[in-house]
Length: 542
Image (spheres, helix red, strand yellow):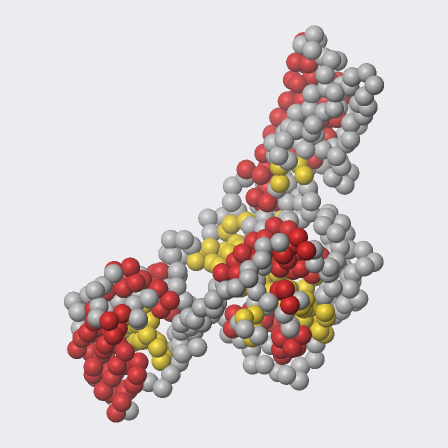
């Protein structure tokens, strides 16, 4: 009988184990055990392939014994189908294959012919030569939030992520209770991470916006975002100072005793997108980009890549479900970052679209732990010197306005006049601004100079523009494509104006005015200025 019990191994493990068996008789016994046990087709194929391989080596005896040949075995499980049409996996494609075969030293006379064996720290054969950097049976805890700053202030998206993280971890405490590894705290925490110059005061502000712990690293060389040092610092904070690929040691900060964060949120800004990809790569995990919805719950998975066995169901606990609009803009996908049977992917990470969540009201009396991070920054990380730079205008942010008046291709008959009418309505409100549909941005309308400054991509609302939630959204001459809806359908009240009574925007408007924007906008402006908007809206709605 074979020394290997196939019932105690997954298919992947069995594929590796059989490579160390050189006795065809033992392999025949192993094949019989598999057929009488779980009878897995993939496992039987792997055993039979090893039997055939040994038979070929015997037949090719002239080559046997002269040179040791090491073959690479592809992991068939990594090519498994997605779990469902609407659920993607941010972790399974993160396996790192080595770039080439190990280099063999020539064993001539007078030369040392010993081979240096490369170890990956696993207690199984590694004939497939997969380079596994992730921890096995690691300890993961807390939700980390990278808080981006600019000009000495927290960005709004940083406050929004802290508020959402606070909400998620408060619910987490109710659903899951104390840490699953019996850690010292009763609840898992929100940990803010800040990098830059003069960060201590902003770390304290992060506590006021929902963080339990705020870890900051400040250095005057970090005043501006730099890829290398920012990545190294944030990854080091996440690892708690432990070297890559090693379990948490005694040098962990006294406020934590685990290997990596359970979750990590980044802002989907220009710098945040860069940093999130690099940090998650350093931490050997996956990333869901540009997300606008988050929740945590258990998930039952049947994908054999994740369960290790075809037909087997495994319940993954504490899974961060990360929702993002599809590239098509017609539906949302939910991204999951799940472990493989022999590989752990943590932190479960994503970048968050600004404006997706509401910031909590700051409580500056709220207690929290503020920690200064210590890491020696290599001079080589700053080898690119930027002697001078220009500061661009802050840009246009529509997310803070109570009212947004947006125009679409309906202004096409007279673009200048259409923009003038929309701006008149904007001026009638105390806190309002102008938005555009993508159709206006890409149409290259010939407009007069006094309104030309308003036709800019910065004002675009939608999937590839700003995502806003004003108290009042007025959409004039906008058809309501799903890409535009993504950017404004969370508005408190939506008033749309369109000559087409079948326009898609009617389906998600609170008030729909069938008419020409060139006629309706002036009436709305008059009504707002006279304080009679409700009456006019009711009249047009009839």
